[in-house]
Image (tube, rainbow, N blue to C red; front, side, top):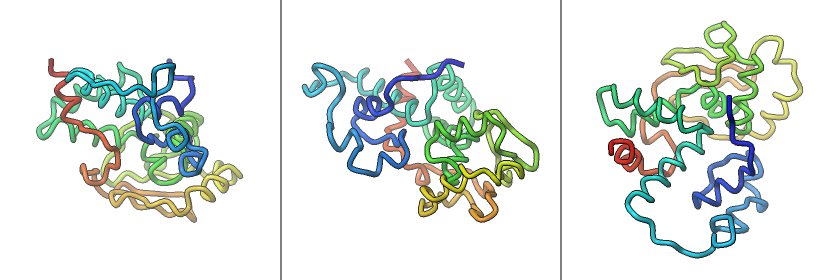
Length: 208
């Protein structure tokens, strides 16, 4: 599948906020936003007034890049959310949060969503005791996520926990770091999602 392969820090600078795409680097003084808090490119430092469409587009791009998705994937999730009862924007974020790669990242079993996606693809995780290698797999309440028995011996997971050990786990998840297991105890609410995005603008953009 196609995937963005450019500089991750440029995406954060373009959106004007940290999207936490580089793991530990995002928390240090090497973070691109801390050093150059303006959009990349020759005219990036110039302030431009965005149109209504421009504002809606930026919010959509921000959410899409936060979760590391392409346009076709993101649109699919929007259509899925629009068919459900409730507030479409919040349902969209809820669906994105329950992707397996995001859940692995939220549990602290990967330093970035990109790494989580790679680890899932390589078969390092199980859901309810069965290996799942599809990053877009949507978890449900009471699903148990664990690092496979063979992978628990990997030095990489020890290195990951050294970085993410103090990370706050969202209240809709339970994690046992010692046994490299976790559980989905509830679906995330809007208050549980730390993405600074105005999701209603995304709904307006796709509803045109």
